[in-house]
Length: 288
Image 1 (cartoon, one colour):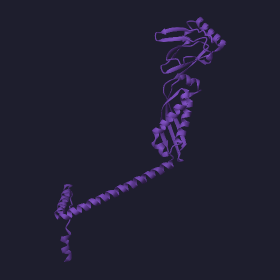
Image 2 (cartoon, one colour):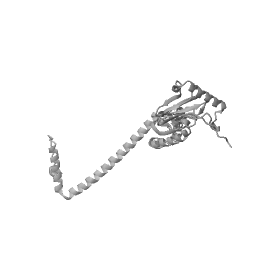
Image 3 (tube, helix red, strand yellow):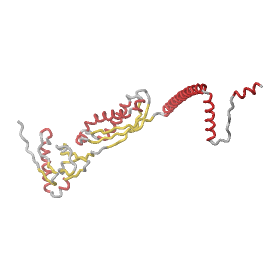
């Protein structure tokens, strides 16, 4: 049966809503600092007590609202996780700490030359938004979480876009960004990183491909315009045919149409008005 470990605990109440703890000199066996470590911690506490109140200014540290502090005692992370925001207490000589920024960080993914699934080379760049979710993991599990996330974003962009066609890359940017975010979030979870958002900024095509696509689009538009013009001519011819049938049934309709045309010409203040003559009147002169 394991014996209970004695602990030395001193709590100093600086403010009603904040408590500062002196960490235990004897900890559990899994994270024990050993006999020498306990002696060093005891000497550090004794040194602090002997040099009061000057030592207080060296032992009390402040972290901002958006920061967390990871305390190391003789190389081990102190139990309780990250400290802050506000005041926290460290022991001189045996403790050190690292501040971790918890705010959202953004960075640009450099343009990546990618060979798509249909063998087209494109240059794609993007932007990533992430933040530190667990400060302890971000310090203990990886050397530089920011640099690792940047490199992982570049490789993830290559891997995801390498499985897409050019048409899918140009049209399905939101789906690609969501897929990248899921992949990055799963990979960086062990580092205490939370990837909040990924966006594809720009897709640059080779100049020759741009010209070919522009020519294809122009030809498509011209063909569509010709089809529309032909349909308009066909509809107009049908309307004229129906109008001629109506006029043929009533000869006075042609005279009314002629007068309406003269009225339209006169309204425009033209100096020259052409009067059409019926062919029946000219046939008599031609015969003579």
